[in-house]
Structures are given as C-alpha cells and as structure tokens.
Length: 125
Length: 126
Image 1 (cartoon, rainbow over the protein chains, first blue to last red):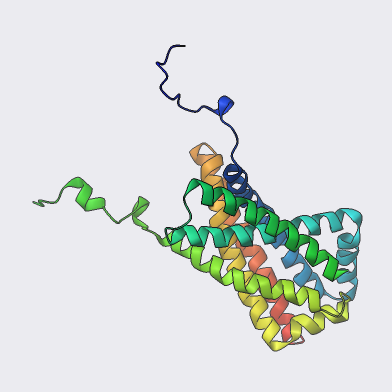
Image 2 (tube, rainbow over the protein chains, first blue to last red; image 1 turned 135 degrees about the horizontal axis):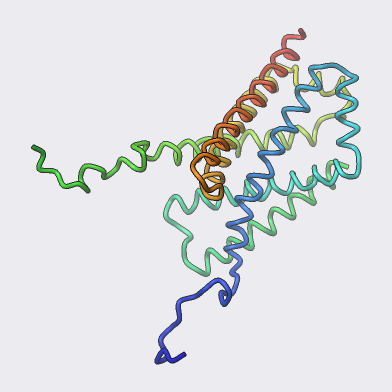
C-alpha cells in the first residue's frame, strides 16, 4: 500500500497496546467488581444483624480459599479504583494529560495498588 | 420568533437536558468514598477480630454506624452511576438496555436498604 510516507491511522490489529489503555479498562472493571462486592458488604452487615448463626455461615464462606481469593481481589479492586480515581480528579483539573505524564501515572497507580493490596494483607494477618 | 441559533439553544444543556449532573454526582460521591473507603479499610485492620460479637460491637458503635450508613448509601449511589454507564456502553438494543438499567437501579436500592436496615437494627440493639 503506497501512502507516500504519511502516517497511517492506527487500527485495532496494529495498535501497540499502551499502559494507559490497561488502567483505563481496569478502572471500569474494578468498578464493576466492587459493585458485586457491595452485595457482599451488604450481606456481611445483614447477616450480622440476623444473628450469630447466620453470621457464622457467612464468615465460613469468606474464610474458604475461594472467599479469601475474592476478598484479595476486592481489596486490589478497591485500592486500584481509589488510586486511579484520584488520577481522574487530577485530570479534572486539566493537568496530567501529556503522554509521558499519563504513562507514568498509569504505572504509578498500578504499582501503588499492588503495594497497598500486599501491605493490607500483611498487616491484616 | 427566537433569533437564537439551534446551537445556542442547546449549549450547556448536555444530553437529555441533564447537564453535568451525572458527572458531578459521580465526582462528589467518589470524593466521599475516598474518605469513607479509607476509613473502612483502616477499621478492618484495627478490628480486634471478626467474630459475631466483634462485628456487632463495631457496627453498633454510634460513630461507626453513622459512617457505615454514609458508606453504604454513597457506595450504592456511586456504583449505580458506574453500572449505568457500563450498561449504556455495552448493552445494545433499547429494550434490553432499559431492562438492565431498571434491574440495576432496583438491585442497588435493595442492597442499600438492606444494609441500612441492618446497621440501624444493630445500632439500636433491636
């Protein structure tokens, strides 16, 4: 295809995936994940109100390996969505849109979320 | 007869004349959740344990109950706004989209009310 050396418009299959796209879709994904987590939070409160027996069966679900895995996932979702949410607030002020800055802040919130998740479970145990 | 241009008539109204209500609701509830969420995470770390008596003592403490009420209501509101956008973006077909939006609103309301009821019940020791 001759294009006289002019830049081609990027298309899905030839687009190099930038880190900002990861954090963008991850913000949405972690939001949806926490919407499901909200049901569990409501369940925790409701079962606590129902009495010791109901609460016990809820907690044994959460204590199972699957429950623990979900809780770790929710904690990462929380820390990522929180950190990236602050990044959105910075953008709302009109700052941080430069390519280098946006890439750097993407890595920053990703690493921060991982560090906070690990720290949370280290302190928790 | 108005001399205003068609563009002039709609500027600042946003889509469906709701303006920036969704945007502001999302940002303000996000700011609230930043504070309430961090408080909740810190509380989870400092709770003596997760036995039923620990949970009742934590939820029933007046300040905790107030902050928990704020947390679940703000979270339900923020989550509803977020899920709404996701549905609007990914669910196609008017009927299916509307059904999903209504179900999402009902579900958010249901779980928020269930959580609020539970917190008040524990807080009042009923």
